[in-house]
Length: 362
Ligand SMILES: [Zn+2]
Ligand SMILES: [Zn+2]
Image (cartoon, rainbow, N blue to C red):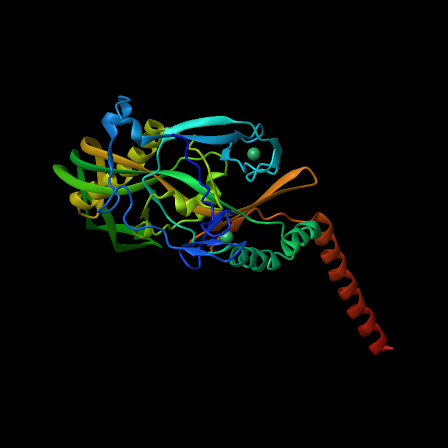
């Protein structure tokens, strides 16, 4: 059950690619356009999978796939390789890798957020962003301007749904004021002092969590992918390999239960907010929360990222662009030389003004 994300053109046999602008497959060779066929294998929307079943390794075989990947020895990314090239660069860290025929057995993606921004628009967005970085090293701006190709990559995520019911115990704090007589500057004065009265409380809250999103890749620093948020998951399409034509997909490195722990932490923070709201009053203390969690489901989804990574003086720099919104995130390298020049420029300017003033005075 190898998933090949290649679709030969019906007209000329070259490969179609998914065109973000049209939302269709296009052949760059002969211009042929092909619609992506109607309802997917999961008609009626994107079905969730049961978490317990998956954890017990009881998912039906058709939910699994073998992704043919190359593993980067530097950053550990497992990315689908381009079958036409034997040596390539890791799109995440620009380390040269030799493509091998490793496979990554994984739970099939259920949903995909198709690219909406094409490569040119992504590069323009990155150029704009870099152009604003006056202190960036020249080599970096060169790179962006000449524009080695940006790589379109579908980054793996998990989403989790769960029904939760929580019982809690805590205290509700109510602010009140006392007046006191104090001696100040030799006079008796009345002052108001804020106090809090704590009352024990207990109660219950419940919440259904829908699509708690957890990154399943370790190839990109989390601060980047976090900064690419928000993702509009309402635009998620049932997974169809056609959406991946011309792009690469990354295999997940964070497995299902690890992702679940992260999702639980996100849910727990929300439940804590719910409990505080439920306690009410002016301040809240929480002593304990017991949460029953049920009906946990999940899905593996792919989100689109345009990526440029390259090495500059031994350092890896990366730029990522949200493939739907065009929002850019990247490392902000500073050129020490440019900064020094700016400081020097400032000194010369200041010196010049001083000279002009002294001339005027003569
Ligand atoms: Zn063609
Ligand atoms: Zn790498």
